[in-house]
Length: 418
Image 1 (cartoon, rainbow, N blue to C red):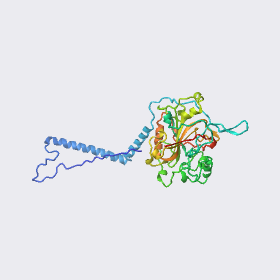
Image 2: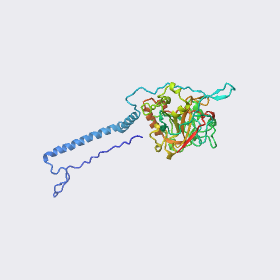
Image 3: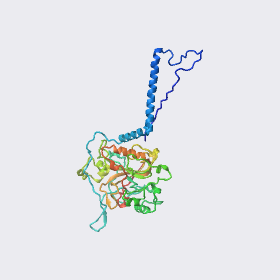
């Protein structure tokens, strides 16, 4: 929010130095110059004249500057520019990034043909993002279990923050706009949503072009949308002047924010936040060490928080510290209904044919949609710009992965309700 500027006006009241008197009037003992020796009066008059002259010069200068376009307008622009620079300024002392790692796990085919009968078998670990509707569970049998307590209690810290256009996960009744009524617990309903793009208007779920047009234009793939958008409500439609986040961000749009966490991050140091996020996740590991870890080791030490927001232009929904992690406010149903499972990294570079090899990692996903002010996102982007590592490639929304199919989702879903 811009600081309030206050101006103090100085008014000078001039009075007649020689007020009229009547013949019988007695000396005015209340006058300032009463009792002043005659030889000091010229000095006093000269001092008053000098003050008046200085005042006249100042007023003339102000009026002259106002005629040229206004002192205040120029001063506010300079002040605003200085504030922006201050909010995004990195530390003056810069050291080499300690978190550039050599862990590189390429995407791989999700399924492979078995040698005996030609039947397809799963070739990877469990994937994310999937269906997180209460009561849902995947079909992939796994022995690994997710972290079921808050990450900080297990020594994990946030090492990155980024977000996706729309949601990658699906929660019936929350982020399923445009699908209509009925039971959509079957994850294949993603195809149904794509079919509906042909007749679903922008105004139903959010402000952007419908998904199939975005895809044809080569833009980021859009995921599911929340049910909160209302084109008749100004807070969902009034434009916001983005100062720090990328200008492609939109009021009224749904975004799924991810906070990757790790015990191997540079926790509590200037190198804690990294982009891309694997630099932060594997900051204190190398490929040789990673290859010795068991699946349960990975799930115990790497996790992601996910929370879904609709951006509004309304300061009643301002939150100042979005960079740190999921908002936990049980009274507002924020972070109080959590799906927990093991999955993988996400993004639109992987799908149900090409899968992520960064698996299994723990996921904690808030099932609810929440309004959040645009200024909250902008403040988060400003905070990202101050980090030692360059996070500029995470200042915009990334594409969303298509909903993960049942056979690629772990059967270890757990719930946390507060």
